[in-house]
Image (cartoon, rainbow, N blue to C red):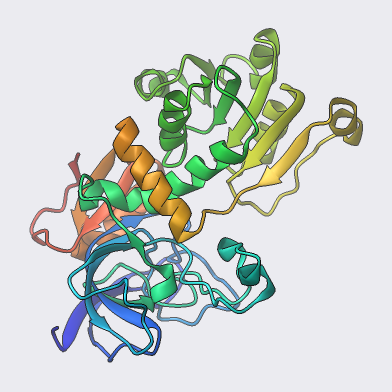
Length: 348
């Protein structure tokens, strides 16, 4: 293991800088990873001004790498050289009330990777062993990384949505999360309706598995879904309250809206509509390491892969801005082994 490593840290909201750091020995219950790739996500901390966040901080929570060193008290299942992944949740405590009930993703003493602890925009990374998950041999690192956030988030939401094979499931927002949701929903046997803005995304939506596409520039999602008999489930991947409120009105009785997009503005919903149709609105936050492994295995079995664009670590700022602008199709991934020479993204 090298004594120093390169990292792209955020000294202030909106800024990233390339630095060299010294690698400390792993703490008890932690491992050190040699990072191979790290996905770039809208929830990364480069722009976040979180009250509990201490800067400078290294963002990145879609990490695939190999274990380079083990701290004391790391379970024997993890070994040096093993290929592993780390998602948004930085390792449950195994002691709080939620952990005692097996709800590890709701652990109250769990760091958020890239917010409370340094993430994967770096060549090396230290993390709690309870955050680790195994990567199937059939998945290359570049395509595995986005599944650890965008993939598991949508995969779990679909598993929790209450719909059965053959039911109509609508996906609101065809971006980094939505393009995974469409693929998973199609492979799970749902009647898949994509909801987006503009015709430029329609071809991609159909290619990704949608049976129908609703362009909200031309018609409301509520009207079109209503004519189709209503949606048994809505997977909302964006944080636009007006768009979510409109689409939710087309939920069928006992339908369920699964919210993944996080925003500060409140949703407008009628209590009578909820009660009269026994409808449900629920949030879904990523998943446990075991859930992530299940999403990875399903991706292999069903041949689901994220569409990614690849850039080297030194161009993390450009990759982050491309993702934030909506120009990426559909996920940006940083490759620690890529040459720093090319400034353009390579699409895979």
